Structure formats: structure tokens, C-alpha cells
Image 1 (cartoon, helix red, strand yellow):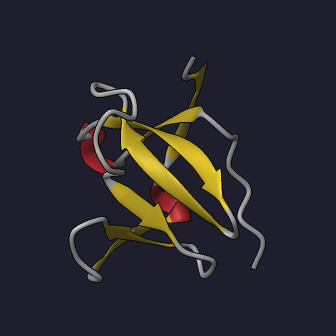
Image 2 (spheres, helix red, strand yellow):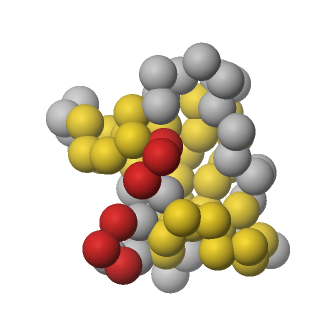
Length: 75
């Protein structure tokens, strides 16, 4: 599976919970809370299979298809 997110692209999580930005890291992406702009560990990891897991657990939360691209880019 090829993941296709924009590096530093801002995405909306399901249910308008929060906005995150994606940073490519090898074959995965790390999703950071834009409120903290990368000052804290990533909020989520998107694995090569497209599943999102919380940084603090291995429990799948969503899939890459659940993200909505806002069209914005994190500086």
C-alpha cells in the first residue's frame, strides 16, 4: 500500500475532533496536533497499512481514508 498524504499537510480528524499535520517518516506518517506545532510527540502514527494508531497505544483508531485534507499546509 502506498500512503499519499501531503508532507506538512493539515488534515481534519473524524467528527471534527482536531486538526493535525502530517510529517513523512520512512514508510509512515506522524500526525502532530497543530496547536502544539510539533513541540510534543506525534498524536498519531499512520502505518504502512493505512491504519492510524494513537502514539500512546497500538489500538487502531481510524484509517487514512478517515482524514479530510483541509488544503492548508503547516509552516
